[in-house]
Image (tube, rainbow, N blue to C red; front, side):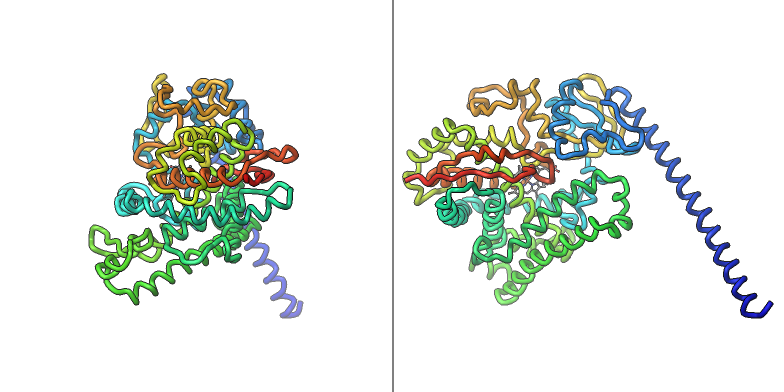
Length: 509
Ligand code: HEM
């Protein structure tokens, strides 16, 4: 045998040896994973033994939930399982879904952290800002940012909100003349982004006029969908596998687009502050906004926030500050369009308060009780945040005596709570009188902004915006449903419609 043939044989031998080692290691890894899968599954089965569940596949879990009918399936399941049921995402991952106000009260009264398994998937996008932080860092950030929502700060925002909505309504006047229905969610998203950019980031110019911002809105819409499907895919839990998948690459791209937007906002302000100088000088010159508060903030040690922390807060507030309100407003408009008698009553209330609507102020916002009742009833039927997740840091016992060990994740389904017939008789009926001042209610039956220490920090901001936008819109337009395109609610980071929200707009003369 020649020398080269011999070395070729040796080479082939070492390759096959290498492959054998890799196969054995691969098999061992697979075995290890299977054992972990089995053990975790047994632990979950034991933990949930007091909570019966609808039947599920040992590996794929509750496949029947995995479609865009998930909300509807949860409603159906709720009929047979009082208070709560375990929802198996796959054979070794399960959450307890709860929709009973007493259960909600117990969980929201504790200080369990956000469930890491779910919320960590948002980190590449919004980082560890207020929404995702836990423990002491969360407390510090919350204390630092609370002044940004003081009512002295919120008061002048009413005018800013009114200016943003008027711009959208002007555009709607042109579109309304075309006589076809319009998809309102996209217009409203641009308008709420415009508002948050002006209020929290003192943006000059208008997001609604500058077409560039559509890229950011589209990135957020993509991230909503990608997050939803990643949570439900066992193979996409691993970061490396996900980053190699097509969805992972799309998510990466969408995060980059979202970050380009927020980085630009931060850079602009940093440059501006360099010209303006010290905090005291800035304070004399203008009102501090959310971004100033972040940039001037000092931790307990006197350090300023890192660039990473600042970016996370800006990404968090940019998203939370516009997508939630866009969802809320779109569904409120749909609810009013399908209930013309309530819409007309709101309009009359607003007309007698605001006349032609040329001026709306903070003081007006408390003087529209019927409109507020309709807004709340729409938030009940269509809560923008459909559910939140906590991981038990210690065992819990619910008022009916059933308990769960530490480590279990609990989904507080706000959507199911709001549609629970035991809490809300005839839950699908739009009935604003449920929110009349004297109507009795469980303290935890209506939670669009969650509750307890980790409730929504932007609740007052959001309620103001909803009132301003609804009031000014009803003065200009009659909202009518498009019967050929009935929206289908789907669960995403915020409540969306599978086929958009189309409305006919009729100009009021
Ligand atoms: C209709 C509009 C809104 C709804 C329905 C809503 C709902 C919620 C809910 C349910 C939570 C709890 C999330 C959880 O526990 O995982 C939350 C938290 C939060 N929201 Fe809102 N939100 C709205 C508007 C806003 C606005 C306008 C802002 C900011 C300007 C905002 C900023 C936040 C932040 C930063 C948190 C995290 C708070 C913390 O953990 O301390 N939200 N929101």
